Length: 232
Image (tube, rainbow, N blue to C red; front, side, top):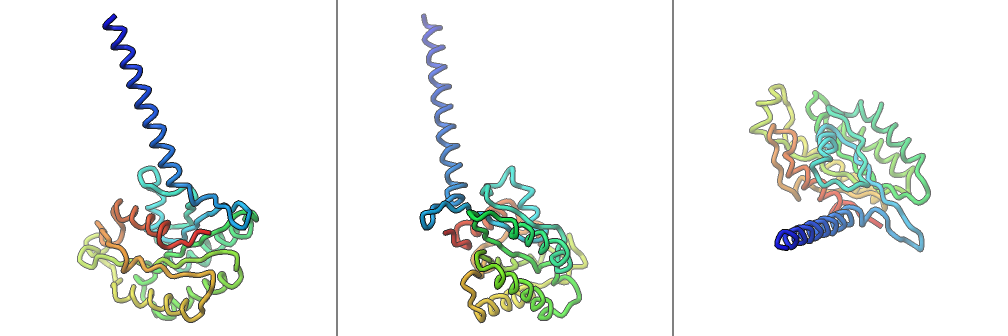
């Protein structure tokens, strides 16, 4: 009889633990997807977020199994990406996605390029003008798309030379790049575009001076999802 009671208690404990796990999974699922499908003007809208970026975003994408990244996040990112990649690959891929969207989709496009361009011997203002010209065309031609410009985030100038000895980037150059994008958006005052200043809003841990720790990766995802994007 004692063995039987222990067995029953064991089964009850297993059932309770299973129920707790199921409830926790449902809560986590809802937290990740509550913004995914939203009723808007009597229609159901499926939100999708496309993040266009370089290795910083590619590494976040590759950590999907250990970071809490919403299911509706799509990455169009490439290590070492700079303006040549954007013209030849990133932009065409993005245009193809936007051109084939369903009527019930609402796309939110987040741009985060520039940190690699600054490492080249370029005219910085001319480069950021070139970027913005392409961005501006997209914004004007896609009034039903929401566009966001996540600031190019800082490097750790004390650490970066250990991993990247030839680095020529500085945070002052990054701020010049960001300020031009921010100024241009304020000037044009698009209704479907927004600047998100993570550079000043977040703290960054960069183990190699350029790329983020897991915690910073998660902070960036949370910032984009909760503070940057205006979901309908």
